[in-house]
Length: 95
Image 1 (tube, rainbow, N blue to C red):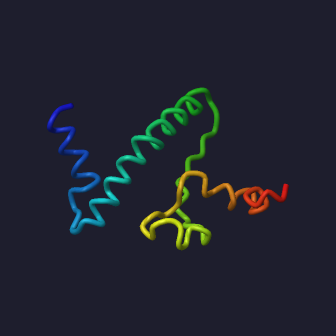
Image 2 (tube, rainbow, N blue to C red):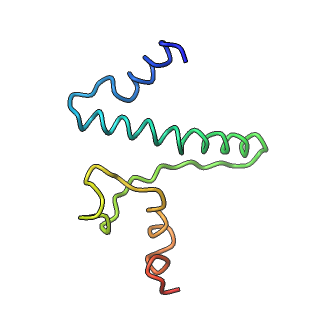
């Protein structure tokens, strides 16, 4: 990895941070992009190249069930969209 790449990544995620919370948020964004977004984009491109319609979204709605359980800076965790897409019965074991 060249210093130019490191500088670009730093500037994208942390470069404009004015406090520790913004540094933390930038670091979490960088890790999330590395672990989830890059591979999702790759798969989406394969589907697109095969001639299929592709839709890409980022779910950021903080569920009310996170209050008091998850730190306030967390927007939405992996899988939080399930309750919004399919409804709460899937989470409550009522099915």
